[in-house]
Amino acid sequence: MIALHTILSAVDIVQMYGKDAHAVQVSGITADSRQVAQGSIFVAVRGTTVDGHTFIPKAIDSGATVIVGEDEMQLPEHITYIRVQHAGLALAQLAHAFYGNPSHQLKLVGITGTNGKTTTATLCYHVLNGLGEKTGLISTVENRIGDTIVPSTHTTPDPVQLNALLARMVEAGCTHVCMEVSSHAAHQHRIGGLRFAGGVFTNITHDHLDYHKTFDQYIAAKKMFFDMLPKSAFALINTDDRRGMVMVQNCKAQTYTYSVKGSADFTARIRENAITGLVLNLDGAEFHSLLLGEFNAWNVLCVYAIGRLLGFDKESVLTILSAQQPVEGRFDVLYATGQKITGIVDYAHTPDAVEKLLSTVKSMLGKNQHMLTVVGCGGDRDKTKRPLMAAVAAKLSDKVVLTSDNPRSEEPESIIREMEAGLTDESKSNCLSITDRREAIRTAVMLAKTGDVICVVGKGHEKYQEIKGVKHPFDDKAVLRDTFKTLVH
Image (cartoon, rainbow, N blue to C red; front, side, top):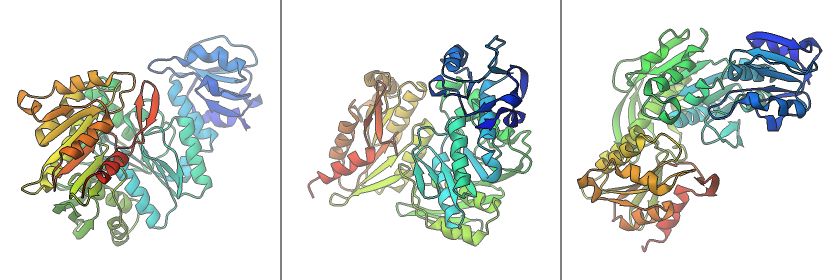
């Protein structure tokens, strides 16, 4: 239990009435009425489909003694009601204070952008651990407290889960945390109240317009993260993205830049891009990376810059960074050695990410090698990118198999039809549509010849396929590996 009045200073209160905050002890905080326990604070957050204010009576019946909301209302005398302008932000601020302001005791680095967040955050985590700092990781793939893995369900957890996780990291002795920051998290104030040591912008391309509605709103959501950075923080911006500097307009943090193409505070130039890895001129030093693909030059450079901005010396950062392996589901390579067929599994799920991946693979192909691509689009998400992704795959691949991704509540066949709308009459002749994703991957393998490369994109690290509200076990990498085993050597 904790005294309510000790955590209220973090919140901008419009009005408070009912039982005196100095006389109230609280046991927890939640925005989910199903999780309310005796002595809880219930925060009535307005979501996109549900208004938390409608669940206030249920929360009180379940034992909530403090209600936080945005509306004027009359509640029983034993309830402390706190009226605020934005309940979502208040939830984050209260959660941070309830868990002892954990971000104040950590060097928290947030990484945002359309592509590269997971790779950058994960590499950064491994590098900092390699430099001797016990580090936490909050990412799409997994969360880590030091070497302990904590399952991940969202790119950025809800404020209560997030602050509870950060508090566990403090308790475990972590000094640094590398964290993905999604546009949803910024817009919904899930990161409200946190104090960041640094913010990083990787890039911004077409994505999440099902939520943000317009590209300008998507950009604005990303910028919200940089607007909240304190003067003591750094803001690291990829200036090869033309919208990079927009992120730091009116930003209080100290701005630094990185670039693979132009001049910047931190620079790299690609000397070699091969199936064996990258060779870069990185900050004046020749650097060998095990990561594949031109796009990973930006990820490697970004992690190097973060290490330097956190105060670590050049040689130490380069040494640890050079030993890093690819992140699971990000340009993840498998081989069918007998047939000399290469498989690549990648999380690319936007037109830009698919184009970058396939362009990189295409640049590595020899004269008689071909590229076959298996690609689908998720249901209940941005529909405008479906024909674009199919068009990009068809333009760059020798053969394309359109298939199901996570159809969720939609019919896979209708999603595939929307993808097919992006195909030209000419490209249709090199495309197949197979609804069953397992069968689509197997078909691509059967069509491949010696030396060919098969790219399976969209799901990457995911170990499930979501259909009609049920997550069925499914792993692109496992299916590809098992199919390779069936090939006659």
